[in-house]
Length: 104
Image 1 (cartoon, rainbow, N blue to C red):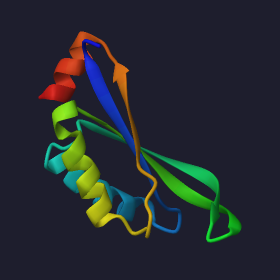
Image 2: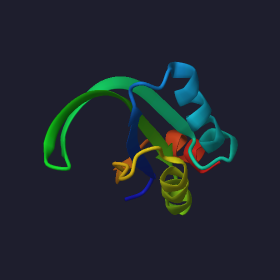
Image 3: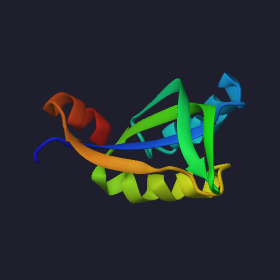
Image 4: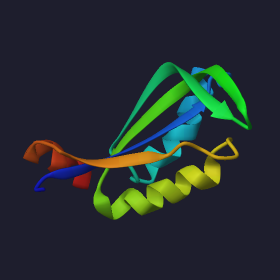
């Protein structure tokens, strides 16, 4: 795929306030590991240690380049408050202009 941008997604605990989520995300932008971080409130349903959970969370979606993806995932793992953070990523095709912006 030409113009491939990587999307890396995780969630953060819903009890964090918006400022705390921003402080968690800011170093990712400051260090240029991601070009963009989207932050949204969500409700997650999942099984954890044999019990069904339904809890508010923050959905964090980051756009990055292939060359920065591994570093970004390592950063998420090292700074994440969850014992097992949900981290998923996938490649997506973008416009040339957006691809160029993400690469910078």
